[in-house]
Length: 88
Image 1 (spheres, rainbow, N blue to C red):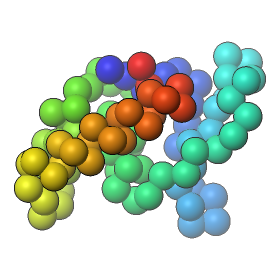
Image 2 (tube, rainbow, N blue to C red; image 1 turned 45 degrees about the horizontal axis):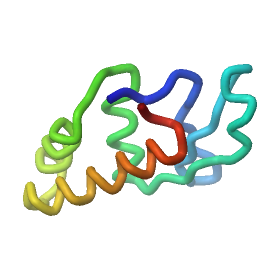
Image 3 (cartoon, rainbow, N blue to C red; image 1 turned 90 degrees about the horizontal axis):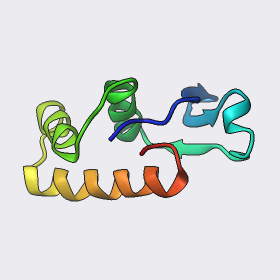
């Protein structure tokens, strides 16, 4: 899986948002808000191929969370990113 080209994470007024940039994202007419943890994961995997297990490792290495909970959270996040068209 990979973050789709043309999407950038920005911090606007203290909020982490994903916005589409360039002509390829002209139909992406919204901003996707991420919490600090999701923004951390985005920053770690942007421009790289990654798996849900990569996200689990990132979560368990940085936060005090069990792998099973991290996996559930990572799956939900990836599903949301895919539904919004910012990851494939």
